[in-house]
Image 1: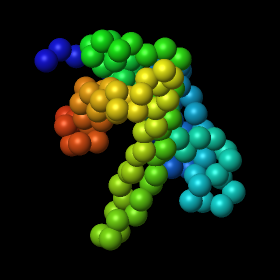
Image 2: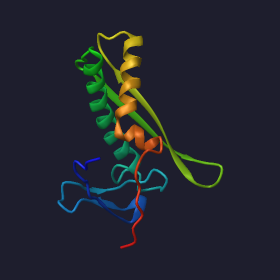
Image 3: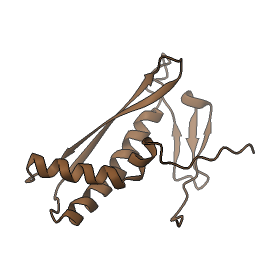
Image 4: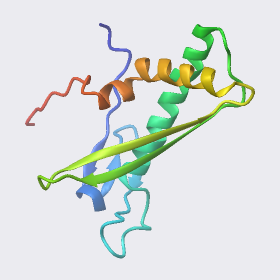
Amino acid sequence: MKTLFTADAISKGGRSGTIEAPDRLLNVTLGNPLEKGTEKDGPNPELLFAGAYSACYHGALINAAKKIGTPVKDSTVRALVSLIEDDQGGYRLGVDLHAKLPGIDRTQAQLIMDEAHKTCPYSKALRGDASVKLVVD
């Protein structure tokens, strides 16, 4: 395996705090829909994840369509990311991915989406195929 690049972001204040990249390309005050009065301060982590996942999956979808021989044009991908409380008092994410592939029939569109889901790194991560290292600094 070869690392292509590494993104770097620092969080302060948790879900009601900020996220900043050392290079300042990202500098966001978060909003927290679970905390009255802060929900409109900015995007929440799930919204940021939805944007990132939709973009990543859309790239994988375009590549899958080319590989299959059915290139897509003017396609869109919408990601709905839900924060879900589980029965053990923890949390997990639920994701619905919606793709619009104009001019492609439903069966072919589903095939393209399934292929994209196999290669998208965000999809793989949600299947437990992510390397996570915990480091105390």
